[in-house]
Image (tube, rainbow, N blue to C red; front, side, top):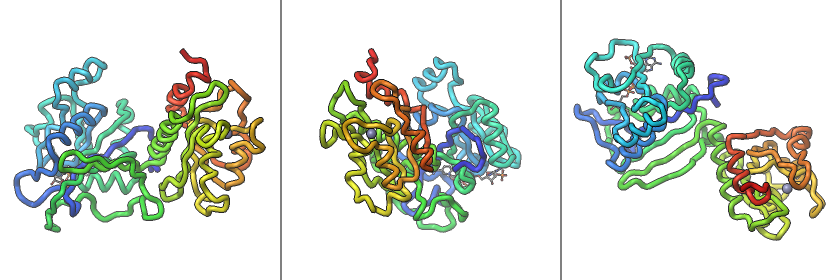
Length: 351
Ligand SMILES: NC(=O)c1ccc[n+]([C@@H]2O[C@H](COP(=O)([O-])OP(=O)(O)OC[C@H]3O[C@@H](n4cnc5c(N)ncnc54)[C@H](OP(=O)(O)O)[C@@H]3O)[C@@H](O)[C@H]2O)c1
Ligand SMILES: [Zn+2]
């Protein structure tokens, strides 16, 4: 998804809008969209990043501090060897006032380069998580260049009703369309506002669905002779079309097999779907005539994402090799492998 090949920074966009999609109104004082509980949530998100970025108009208009406020969170950052508040990054081609509030606390950087240059510079400085807090022009640029992994959008239940007010995003070509949608990860009520979390990059979506598969694996009836696995099948539009877990319907059924059994073999959605499995699909089975790798190939699923290669506890797994040889795209997400081992402590003889 990223326009910059090889960028590994996680970029999170955060903002609050009215029901009609405005970031602010046209009055001189700042419009309050969020509430105290949500501001505290934003403070928590800030404390978890390495840098916070805004556009110069946001500085001119709102004069935000852009700091972590909670003393406990600041202390926790320091205890972890980080500065108490993340690096502040302001995009501007002009002078930024010397008395701007963000300058009072922590390190800051004014940048006038292209977004790609800014992101590259921040990566060089060791920034791994970047939070972008607006405004509309900057958000539009991050979204239309495909340089975003997640959007945390807070919606306040009122209208601004004035087209002269600053919009959430401007016109542009966005990578998400009705056919190739962003992944809706969660919707949460925070008092009188709603927090929507959208995953925008492929890698963020993969982690989300794999985490869901791992969650399902915790529903497996315990066993010492077979692994506990969860599987989710997601169609091209980002909709879950089937899911399953080991021993869901009988003592021997595998997660992928159980999920596939819930769909007709000729379901056209399978041809463009992705199968997420916490563990590499099996290549050999004693208890059933067909392995999961074979079932996946026969279903015509073009892509499989998994977290952990099958440990050689029971059989030597060659599912990944078999699927790759058959032209299926394999994606391994080793960051989540420990969670899969955790769900299989018994089988792996872990303490
Ligand atoms: N509700 C919310 O969550 C929220 C959050 C933030 C802001 N806001 C609101 O959003 C409004 C501001 O939004 P906006 O769209 O007008 O402006 P903005 O996105 O905050 O800032 C745009 C400015 O950033 C600089 N800039 C942008 N891209 C750049 C680049 N690639 N390189 C260098 N400079 C770049 C330019 O400043 P120069 O002119 O200096 O070059 C540009 O004019 C305010 O009303 C504010 O209250 C709301
Ligand atoms: Zn299997």
